[in-house]
Image (cartoon, rainbow, N blue to C red; front, side, top):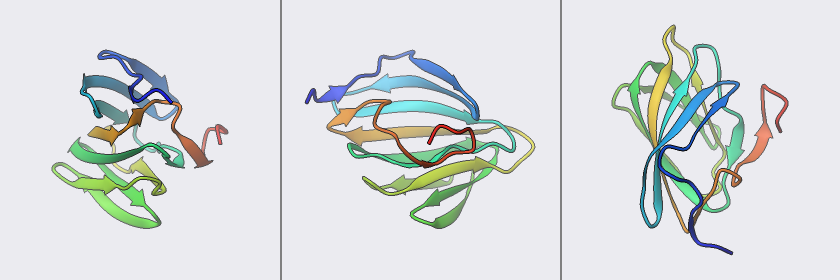
Amino acid sequence: MRLGSLYKIGDNDQRPWGTWHVLDIGERHVVKRIVVNPGERLSLQYHNHRSERWTAVSGQGVAEVDGTHHSFELGHTVDIPLKATHRVSCTGNQPLVFIEIQYGELLDENDIIRLSDDYSRA
């Protein structure tokens, strides 16, 4: 298995729920800016190779980690351990914007195991 990040600074993608953009990469971390559109949410998912820390920078939402729901707005931080099920929803009228820091031995967009998805991707 190749260790490290398979991302590059500047990588980005449009998803049905919003967008993500890679801001920084280190030996065992990746930093993304994620925007979730009002009324949208990410899939319920987990990762086999990374843990994450989310910090909200604007908007309002709910972060779910292993079945526990957390209010998620400016300055709130949520830690997502390796293999924990998680998702985030935008509950406000403006997009929810947060910074995601991924930590792990292998950081790859393919390390998403979807359990449930509003957009038929599970």
